[in-house]
Amino acid sequence: DDTPAVQLEGDNPYRSPETRAMTLAQLLDRLETLEDRLEELISSVSDEQLARKARITGWADGAPFRELTFLEVAHRAFTVHWPEHTGQLYAIREELGVADL
Image 1 (cartoon, one colour):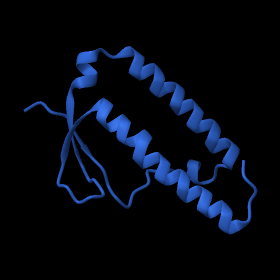
Image 2 (cartoon, helix red, strand yellow; image 1 turned 120 degrees about the vertical axis):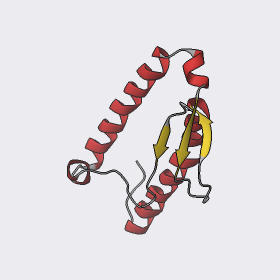
Image 3 (tube, one colour; image 1 turned 60 degrees about the vertical axis):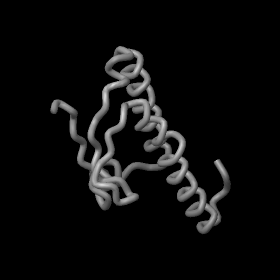
Image 4 (cartoon, helix red, strand yellow; image 1 turned 180 degrees about the vertical axis):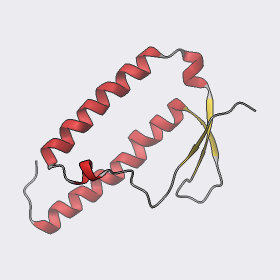
């Protein structure tokens, strides 16, 4: 079986000391850079590569692993995962009394 494996750790946000020290503006700039790199990556791979499945472990729902294509993972990230974090950030800003962006 040559299915790639990706191990996620639920309590590890993968934030370095550098990213922890960033201002909001710096973080947004970093996210825009990552978005550009992701767009370049997606446009450089074939349909066959996008359809290939990877075994991903560490889902929040407790499933031991899922075999998903890159497009399925990207769809879940854009429609479920990142919007959840956006909601968390808005709630924090509201609690702090910070004006909307």
